[in-house]
Picture (tube, rainbow, N blue to C red):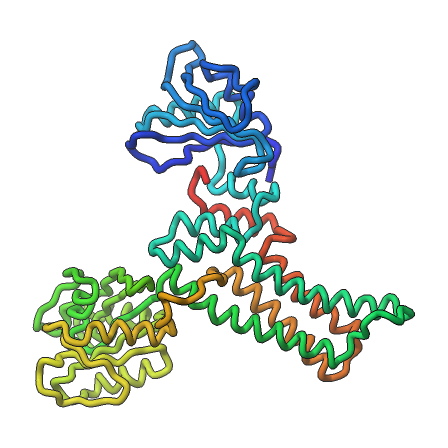
Length: 449
């Protein structure tokens, strides 16, 4: 990727608003924009100053009156000279201002290219760069807090701490190998290295466990409501979301396809999916719904299995109990307003008709997800698959080193595993960036960021 050219893009949301902003970044940002700006000579102004003027056509006609913020490298978002042009917020006028800027030879930015340049120019590490988009896309206060921790390097410091501890072990071993004549060098024996490696593995296990919870808070938990027809699945969806998302009737098979809804339980987002009743049916449309229900069940991170408490367990109920026994699930006995004819251990009893037990159900959902402490928990952990996958690789490399230590394999052999773990942790921060990875990662960003 070229980092010596100058780019521009509209940095505000598309649509009509009070103002819009076009961002320009690169070595010729100030000089090229100055050729279309009528006002002060921007080449002579101080950094981090704002100037009033007009963007003009090639013939000198005014396109729009604007406020221009000039920021000179290196104290900018990208680390490059940057110009931000605030225009009136109309779609047409903003487009024309951008087109005029591009006529000067400035290139249209790719999605996420401003942040990519910030990373490449050392203004932020890769965790911070990913957190920029997380801030923009956050859908809950907890998700925003996670993203903010990433942006402020709280998460990067966790990884840096692990790397520093690893580097201390590796450096000690290398000294023993390369300079055995140093009498005052600490001999990195099995009794010293093994506990240090065990402590790192333990801390990575904790990091991975807590990071899984962070990912659920940030991305949401795919939650599937299952049950045979007419047990109250759609009523439960409507009750939890306080909306009439799903059609409710007394006719079995009313829900013929999956119905999606979003629910926030005290900061934990759930992607709720109400499924068609899983049963044998000759109805062609309902068959498709049942097939989709089974697929949703396979992909679910949490299953809410709804049973009708007012009737004895049916064979269909027993099939669903067996089908979901290896999933993270809650068994819900609905229709608490009617006399009970089904009892099971470890269930939540509710009535979607009266609202009985709904608060208890929400508590049980958080408990099942191990997020009962959502209000007080520390959110300074990883939050995406790329980061956690690399921690897993680092942990596995440490486990290989541990096995080698226990087998009394020479240190110069297993030090390669320790180094591999150190490198994998470095990949989280982007210490050795891969161009293809960066292009893929930043392509998910919005244009202008």
